[in-house]
Length: 254
Image (cartoon, rainbow, N blue to C red; front, side, top):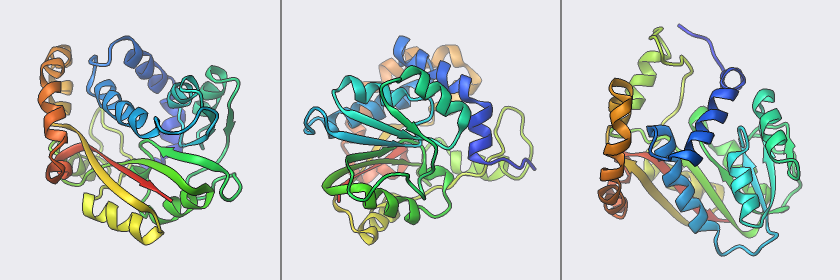
C-alpha cells in the first residue's frame, strides 16, 4: 500500500502538471485531462464574467498557476494559495505579478471578507471533510462574493471512486496510491447550505467513461472527444444526471 499525501504527490508531479496545461493550450482534446479542464474553464469563465475588472479572485490550490494566468488575462487581481513548493515555484515563475502564497484550503492566509471570488479546482477531492475548507472560503469572501469549486463525483461513469479505493490499498502500476474522497451532488449542495452559502447550483461536466479509453488507446481519445462534445454539452444541461459526470462544480454566493 502506498503512503502518499496530496502535497508530496504534487511536489513529485509539478512538471507533469505544467506540461499537461501546456497541452491544454495547444490542443484541449489531447487527453481526458485537458478536455476535462477545458469544460471546467469554460464554465468558470461564464460564472466570473459579471465581475468587474480588477476584482480580487483567490485561487485555492492554484497548482502550477494555469488558472491564475487565465484569470489575470480576464483582468482580475489574482492571488494563489498552494501548499506544494514545487508547484508554487512554477506558478510564481509564470505569474510574476500575482502573489502565490504558501497555505492550504483549511487555513487560508488572507483577511476576512478580502476577495470577490474564490475558486478551488481539484482540491476537495483530497479532503476527507470539505466543511473546514468551505468555511474558510466563506470567511475570506466578501458578502455576495462568488464561489466556484470542483468535486469528484461518487457515481461518475468513469468508475474512478472504485478504482481509487482499490489503488489506495494495493499497488497498481501507473495509478497513484493517494486516497481521494468522493461526494454526491446532493451532499455537496447540502454542505454548502450548512456552511452558509446562497444561490447554490451544482453542475455536472464531462460525461462518459473516457478515462478508460484514454488509458487503453490514448491516440484515439482526441478525435472521439471532439465528436462527443456536442452531445456532452446537451447532457450537461440535464441537471438530474450530474452525479454521473466526471466533474461536479459547486457555484454559489456568500
